[in-house]
Image (cartoon, rainbow over all chains, first blue to last red; front, side, top):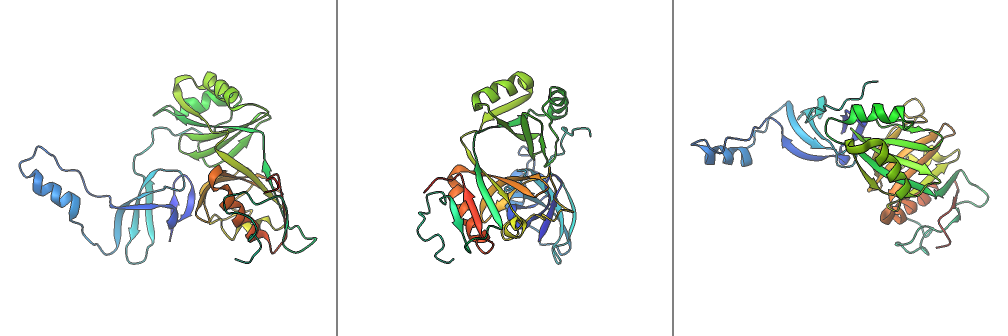
Length: 92
Length: 202
Protein backbone atom coordinates (compact mmCIF):
# COMPACT_ATOMS: atom_id res chain seq x y z
CA UNK A 1 0.00 0.00 0.00
CA UNK A 2 1.28 3.47 -0.87
CA UNK A 3 0.14 6.73 0.72
CA UNK A 4 0.37 10.02 -1.21
CA UNK A 5 1.88 12.32 1.42
CA UNK A 6 1.00 15.98 0.71
CA UNK A 7 4.65 16.98 1.25
CA UNK A 8 6.73 13.95 0.21
CA UNK A 9 4.62 12.39 -2.55
CA UNK A 10 3.79 8.71 -2.97
CA UNK A 11 5.41 6.60 -0.25
CA UNK A 12 5.29 3.02 0.94
CA UNK A 13 3.07 2.43 3.99
CA UNK A 14 6.02 1.10 6.01
CA UNK A 15 7.33 4.69 6.36
CA UNK A 16 4.21 5.57 8.36
CA UNK A 17 2.96 4.75 11.85
CA UNK A 18 -0.77 4.07 12.20
CA UNK A 19 -2.83 5.61 14.97
CA UNK A 20 -6.42 4.88 13.90
CA UNK A 21 -9.81 6.56 13.85
CA UNK A 22 -9.56 10.27 13.05
CA UNK A 23 -13.25 10.98 13.62
CA UNK A 24 -13.16 10.86 17.43
CA UNK A 25 -13.32 14.02 19.53
CA UNK A 26 -11.94 14.19 23.04
CA UNK A 27 -14.90 14.33 25.45
CA UNK A 28 -15.48 17.15 27.91
CA UNK A 29 -13.90 16.02 31.22
CA UNK A 30 -16.36 18.24 33.16
CA UNK A 31 -19.45 16.53 31.74
CA UNK A 32 -21.54 14.40 34.11
CA UNK A 33 -21.04 11.28 31.93
CA UNK A 34 -17.29 11.91 31.48
CA UNK A 35 -16.19 8.47 32.71
CA UNK A 36 -18.36 6.63 30.20
CA UNK A 37 -17.50 9.07 27.43
CA UNK A 38 -13.76 8.65 28.03
CA UNK A 39 -14.14 4.85 28.11
CA UNK A 40 -15.78 5.00 24.68
CA UNK A 41 -13.19 7.52 23.42
CA UNK A 42 -10.24 5.41 24.56
CA UNK A 43 -11.42 1.85 23.89
CA UNK A 44 -14.50 1.49 21.71
CA UNK A 45 -13.91 1.39 17.96
CA UNK A 46 -16.13 0.85 14.96
CA UNK A 47 -14.85 -1.49 12.29
CA UNK A 48 -16.34 0.15 9.23
CA UNK A 49 -16.38 -1.38 5.77
CA UNK A 50 -15.38 1.06 3.05
CA UNK A 51 -14.19 4.64 3.53
CA UNK A 52 -12.53 5.31 6.89
CA UNK A 53 -10.79 8.46 8.11
CA UNK A 54 -7.66 7.63 10.08
CA UNK A 55 -4.46 9.15 11.44
CA UNK A 56 -1.10 8.17 9.95
CA UNK A 57 2.20 9.65 11.13
CA UNK A 58 4.90 10.01 8.47
CA UNK A 59 7.66 8.97 10.87
CA UNK A 60 10.29 8.21 8.21
CA UNK A 61 9.52 11.16 5.98
CA UNK A 62 8.35 14.69 6.73
CA UNK A 63 7.31 13.78 10.32
CA UNK A 64 3.83 15.23 9.92
CA UNK A 65 0.52 13.74 11.07
CA UNK A 66 -1.86 13.03 8.21
CA UNK A 67 -5.56 12.29 8.00
CA UNK A 68 -5.95 9.60 5.37
CA UNK A 69 -9.31 8.44 4.01
CA UNK A 70 -8.83 4.77 3.13
CA UNK A 71 -11.18 2.14 1.79
CA UNK A 72 -10.82 -0.65 4.36
CA UNK A 73 -11.78 -3.33 1.80
CA UNK A 74 -9.50 -2.33 -1.08
CA UNK A 75 -6.87 -0.07 0.60
CA UNK A 76 -7.66 2.53 -2.03
CA UNK A 77 -6.65 5.97 -0.71
CA UNK A 78 -9.53 8.39 -1.23
CA UNK A 79 -8.01 11.51 0.31
CA UNK A 80 -5.00 12.78 2.30
CA UNK A 81 -4.45 16.01 4.19
CA UNK A 82 -2.21 17.30 6.99
CA UNK A 83 -3.95 16.65 10.32
CA UNK A 84 -3.16 20.20 11.36
CA UNK A 85 -3.57 22.56 8.42
CA UNK A 86 -0.41 24.61 8.02
CA UNK A 87 -0.44 28.36 8.20
CA UNK A 88 3.05 28.29 6.77
CA UNK A 89 2.51 27.93 3.04
CA UNK A 90 5.27 29.58 1.06
CA UNK A 91 3.91 31.43 -1.99
CA UNK A 92 5.39 30.16 -5.25
CA UNK B 1 24.53 -12.36 1.56
CA UNK B 2 27.73 -13.72 0.04
CA UNK B 3 31.09 -13.43 1.77
CA UNK B 4 31.77 -10.14 -0.08
CA UNK B 5 31.91 -8.21 3.22
CA UNK B 6 32.66 -11.08 5.57
CA UNK B 7 36.02 -9.51 6.50
CA UNK B 8 34.52 -6.10 7.34
CA UNK B 9 33.39 -5.58 10.96
CA UNK B 10 29.72 -4.54 11.09
CA UNK B 11 30.62 -1.54 13.21
CA UNK B 12 33.10 -0.09 10.70
CA UNK B 13 32.62 1.76 7.42
CA UNK B 14 33.12 -0.45 4.37
CA UNK B 15 36.78 0.28 3.44
CA UNK B 16 37.54 2.13 0.22
CA UNK B 17 38.29 -0.10 -2.75
CA UNK B 18 36.66 -2.03 -5.56
CA UNK B 19 33.99 -4.65 -4.99
CA UNK B 20 32.45 -7.02 -7.53
CA UNK B 21 33.75 -8.20 -10.91
CA UNK B 22 37.33 -7.15 -11.55
CA UNK B 23 37.77 -4.16 -13.85
CA UNK B 24 34.11 -3.11 -13.70
CA UNK B 25 32.80 0.00 -11.95
CA UNK B 26 29.18 0.56 -12.93
CA UNK B 27 28.79 2.50 -9.70
CA UNK B 28 31.13 4.94 -7.99
CA UNK B 29 30.56 6.06 -4.42
CA UNK B 30 32.57 8.43 -2.30
CA UNK B 31 32.24 9.99 1.08
CA UNK B 32 31.83 13.75 0.74
CA UNK B 33 33.87 15.52 3.39
CA UNK B 34 34.25 19.11 4.49
CA UNK B 35 30.59 20.16 4.52
CA UNK B 36 29.02 22.14 7.35
CA UNK B 37 25.40 21.10 7.95
CA UNK B 38 22.63 22.74 9.93
CA UNK B 39 18.90 22.23 10.36
CA UNK B 40 16.71 25.29 10.10
CA UNK B 41 13.11 25.08 11.35
CA UNK B 42 10.71 27.98 11.03
CA UNK B 43 8.80 29.04 14.11
CA UNK B 44 5.04 28.57 13.94
CA UNK B 45 3.51 30.84 11.32
CA UNK B 46 6.91 32.22 10.24
CA UNK B 47 7.86 29.92 7.34
CA UNK B 48 6.57 32.09 4.51
CA UNK B 49 8.11 35.28 5.85
CA UNK B 50 11.37 33.53 6.70
CA UNK B 51 11.66 31.96 3.22
CA UNK B 52 11.05 35.32 1.58
CA UNK B 53 13.65 37.11 3.67
CA UNK B 54 16.30 34.42 3.32
CA UNK B 55 15.73 34.07 -0.44
CA UNK B 56 16.33 37.82 -0.74
CA UNK B 57 19.54 37.39 1.29
CA UNK B 58 20.84 34.71 -1.09
CA UNK B 59 19.71 31.59 0.75
CA UNK B 60 17.04 29.92 -1.41
CA UNK B 61 14.38 28.20 0.73
CA UNK B 62 11.66 26.28 -1.11
CA UNK B 63 8.98 24.70 1.11
CA UNK B 64 9.04 21.36 -0.74
CA UNK B 65 11.32 18.30 -0.98
CA UNK B 66 13.80 20.07 -3.25
CA UNK B 67 17.55 20.63 -3.20
CA UNK B 68 18.53 24.11 -4.32
CA UNK B 69 22.17 25.13 -4.69
CA UNK B 70 23.91 28.48 -4.93
CA UNK B 71 27.66 29.07 -5.03
CA UNK B 72 27.89 28.89 -1.25
CA UNK B 73 24.91 26.85 0.01
CA UNK B 74 22.63 23.92 -0.70
CA UNK B 75 19.22 23.91 0.98
CA UNK B 76 17.10 20.76 1.19
CA UNK B 77 13.45 20.65 2.23
CA UNK B 78 12.87 17.83 4.77
CA UNK B 79 9.36 18.74 5.96
CA UNK B 80 6.97 21.70 5.95
CA UNK B 81 8.91 24.72 7.25
CA UNK B 82 12.05 22.62 7.80
CA UNK B 83 15.33 22.55 5.87
CA UNK B 84 18.85 21.19 5.90
CA UNK B 85 21.47 23.77 5.00
CA UNK B 86 24.84 22.59 3.67
CA UNK B 87 27.85 24.81 3.15
CA UNK B 88 31.29 24.11 1.77
CA UNK B 89 34.50 25.51 3.20
CA UNK B 90 32.88 26.71 6.41
CA UNK B 91 32.76 25.39 9.97
CA UNK B 92 29.45 24.43 11.56
CA UNK B 93 29.87 27.26 14.06
CA UNK B 94 30.34 29.82 11.29
CA UNK B 95 27.33 28.45 9.37
CA UNK B 96 25.15 28.66 12.48
CA UNK B 97 26.29 32.22 13.15
CA UNK B 98 25.54 33.20 9.55
CA UNK B 99 22.07 31.58 9.57
CA UNK B 100 21.32 33.06 12.98
CA UNK B 101 22.08 36.56 11.75
CA UNK B 102 19.71 36.05 8.79
CA UNK B 103 16.85 34.26 10.54
CA UNK B 104 16.79 36.11 13.84
CA UNK B 105 13.99 34.84 16.10
CA UNK B 106 11.97 33.30 13.24
CA UNK B 107 13.78 29.95 13.22
CA UNK B 108 15.52 27.39 15.38
CA UNK B 109 18.95 26.23 14.27
CA UNK B 110 21.00 23.15 15.08
CA UNK B 111 24.54 22.35 14.01
CA UNK B 112 24.47 18.88 12.42
CA UNK B 113 27.95 18.93 10.89
CA UNK B 114 29.18 15.92 12.87
CA UNK B 115 25.88 14.02 12.82
CA UNK B 116 25.86 12.53 9.35
CA UNK B 117 27.84 10.82 6.66
CA UNK B 118 27.27 12.10 3.13
CA UNK B 119 27.82 9.60 0.32
CA UNK B 120 27.73 10.53 -3.35
CA UNK B 121 26.59 7.76 -5.69
CA UNK B 122 27.19 8.05 -9.45
CA UNK B 123 27.78 5.84 -12.47
CA UNK B 124 25.76 4.21 -15.25
CA UNK B 125 24.32 1.59 -12.88
CA UNK B 126 23.56 3.95 -9.99
CA UNK B 127 19.80 3.89 -10.62
CA UNK B 128 19.65 0.10 -10.99
CA UNK B 129 21.51 -0.20 -7.69
CA UNK B 130 19.32 2.26 -5.80
CA UNK B 131 16.17 0.54 -7.12
CA UNK B 132 17.04 -2.35 -4.80
CA UNK B 133 16.41 -0.32 -1.66
CA UNK B 134 14.97 3.11 -2.41
CA UNK B 135 11.16 2.90 -2.58
CA UNK B 136 10.92 6.26 -4.36
CA UNK B 137 10.50 6.42 -8.13
CA UNK B 138 13.89 7.56 -9.47
CA UNK B 139 12.96 7.45 -13.16
CA UNK B 140 14.04 10.76 -14.76
CA UNK B 141 10.39 11.59 -15.51
CA UNK B 142 9.55 11.39 -11.78
CA UNK B 143 12.76 12.42 -9.96
CA UNK B 144 15.41 14.68 -11.46
CA UNK B 145 18.23 17.02 -10.56
CA UNK B 146 17.08 19.21 -7.67
CA UNK B 147 14.59 16.69 -6.27
CA UNK B 148 15.05 15.43 -2.70
CA UNK B 149 13.42 12.83 -0.46
CA UNK B 150 13.52 11.79 3.18
CA UNK B 151 12.83 8.07 3.37
CA UNK B 152 14.10 4.67 4.50
CA UNK B 153 16.68 2.52 2.74
CA UNK B 154 17.09 -0.99 4.06
CA UNK B 155 15.61 0.10 7.44
CA UNK B 156 18.01 3.07 7.66
CA UNK B 157 16.57 6.58 7.60
CA UNK B 158 18.13 8.79 4.92
CA UNK B 159 17.70 12.14 3.27
CA UNK B 160 18.91 12.08 -0.31
CA UNK B 161 18.84 14.36 -3.31
CA UNK B 162 19.85 14.26 -6.95
CA UNK B 163 22.66 16.75 -7.40
CA UNK B 164 22.96 16.52 -11.20
CA UNK B 165 21.40 14.82 -14.21
CA UNK B 166 24.35 12.41 -14.79
CA UNK B 167 22.78 11.16 -12.46
CA UNK B 168 24.56 11.85 -9.18
CA UNK B 169 22.80 11.29 -5.87
CA UNK B 170 23.90 12.37 -2.43
CA UNK B 171 22.76 10.35 0.57
CA UNK B 172 22.88 11.73 4.07
CA UNK B 173 22.86 9.01 6.72
CA UNK B 174 23.12 9.31 10.49
CA UNK B 175 26.77 8.58 11.28
CA UNK B 176 26.12 5.54 13.47
CA UNK B 177 23.98 3.94 10.73
CA UNK B 178 26.53 4.62 7.99
CA UNK B 179 28.26 1.19 8.26
CA UNK B 180 24.90 -0.54 7.66
CA UNK B 181 24.04 1.79 4.79
CA UNK B 182 27.42 1.27 3.12
CA UNK B 183 27.09 -2.51 3.46
CA UNK B 184 23.71 -2.32 1.73
CA UNK B 185 25.12 -0.07 -1.01
CA UNK B 186 28.21 -2.19 -1.59
CA UNK B 187 26.29 -5.47 -1.69
CA UNK B 188 23.61 -3.99 -3.98
CA UNK B 189 26.14 -2.52 -6.41
CA UNK B 190 28.51 -5.47 -6.40
CA UNK B 191 26.96 -7.12 -9.47
CA UNK B 192 27.83 -3.97 -11.47
CA UNK B 193 31.17 -3.41 -9.77
CA UNK B 194 31.52 -0.54 -7.30
CA UNK B 195 34.48 1.73 -6.64
CA UNK B 196 34.19 3.13 -3.14
CA UNK B 197 36.39 5.97 -1.92
CA UNK B 198 36.79 8.30 1.02
CA UNK B 199 35.85 5.76 3.69
CA UNK B 200 39.34 4.94 4.86
CA UNK B 201 41.08 1.57 4.91
CA UNK B 202 38.83 -0.04 7.53
